[in-house]
Length: 210
Image (cartoon, rainbow, N blue to C red; front, side, top):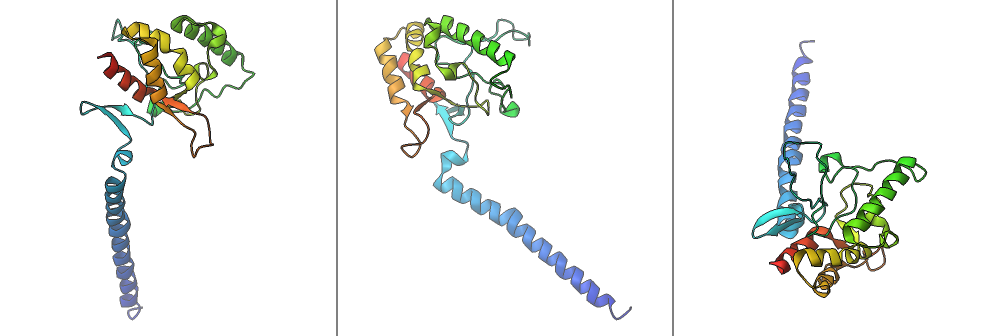
């Protein structure tokens, strides 16, 4: 037993040295190297694809957000949100665009609650944008799977043009041009549908409105 103890100790020390070495490599050197490469080659993406206005971060182009009027009573947690007519509005979100509550409603197409919610959204959007309920696009009525979708369809963006133009004192033609300029094509030229990033569109709208 006395002869085997040094060998056991050596094995433990070797294992400890290997553990420390791998900890330094995988826990310190590798993360720093990956972070450095990411910052050098993809700085904006590595920082979360931030959108800045006058040097101030106003959001991420990858995460949607609400564009609501300030609460009349900030202390009232039950006060309903009121969309701001001066801005383009995103699609509905089951999690109110809270990144910590990302997810869908999990309601199926035969759910009475979902049918009722869609009918109510159709009425609300039509009244808010001043259009015929039949003209309201599908993405204005249904939430995305993540609840954080930053984009809307061209149809929904153009449907909001007249309301946004009137609220900002701009011509519909000028606002329509903003939508066209902010329209993104299909991924790889054939995947998905063209979309419009709501945050970037509203940033350009704010610049145009002065």
